[in-house]
Image (cartoon, rainbow, N blue to C red; front, side, top):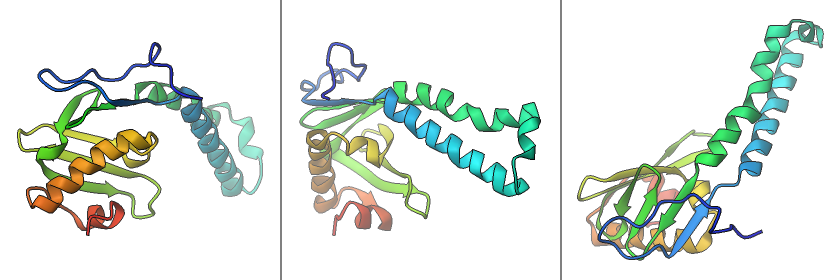
Length: 169
């Protein structure tokens, strides 16, 4: 199902820049499903930790189990990103993609959650989950082209993980 632009909550184009060419609004249902998955993992952990279900009779232990879907609901509502021909924006800022000074990929060594951190020459910074930005392929292409341009020109510093994960070598 395609996102509905009339109901979406994504950043407008920054002042003095071109129009929004692509955007992505996170789906709440996907986040809540992730919350339920985490809840099941926590439930299994508690059962394995006590070698049974005796912990279930203690009401306050359920508080450690039931929180993920509720928290993930609000996380899912907060994701909204957009991009133009030479900029990329999240809710709390934007960067000029063809004038990047720093490109980093950071995250867990297990590879479950990689974050893309971008900083441009003007000092603007954004950070976003790599999976989230790659959900909309056309949006990712706009951002990736700017990243490649900045790195190949030599104006953007990278870390080894960015070179590897984004295939910038």
